[in-house]
Amino acid sequence: MRIEEGVLMSKHENFWIVTVLRGLLAILIGSAILVVPDMARTLLFLPFAVAFVILSLVAFGIADSVLVFITSFFTSLEPAKVALRLQSAFGVAIGILFCSMLFDRIRLEWFLYLIALQAFATACSEFTIARHTSKHHGSRSSYVAAAVAMLCAVAYTIVATIAPTNLTPREIAILAYTYLAVFGAAQVLMATRMLYIEHRAMQLAHAASQ
Image (cartoon, rainbow, N blue to C red; front, side):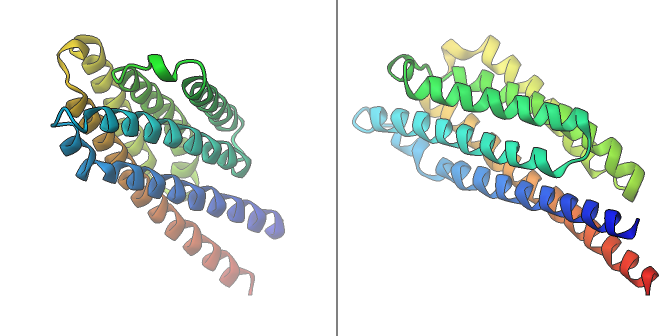
């Protein structure tokens, strides 16, 4: 029984480690907000800025989807596992589609809808995981993450629906990279906290077995 609990805790730790990697990836891509919006200010560099935004967001979408798929192996919750794998499959499919047939036709405002969709999928999976972690560890941080993700989904859906024609490439780049930076920071902070909780739980379980 204790062996099974140890294996389960190890899987949970792996889940949060991969979540930290997802957060670091989002922060890395989101840091382009320091450079790309300024490039988009000038007509000379605008095409390069637009191309970079498209390529970086597509690359992030595919890489993040692969990491999401990996996390699905480290959860014992069937609903969360299904949601994560569907999210991963959709992300990879969209990335491949954008890289192939639609690359020359991509409009930057499409990414606002994709961000909203990713935030909604994240909110659903975080809510499912929060129900599990709150029962086992008394931690409700994932509920906060789910609520923030849902707010982002609503906000970006409204922005994408109401104001796409009024947004410049620079403004869209700022919105996209800001989301990635905030999303990444939230993932890292939440996952780091959960790793600490899991580590403490393993220490207590080990001490109890002595």
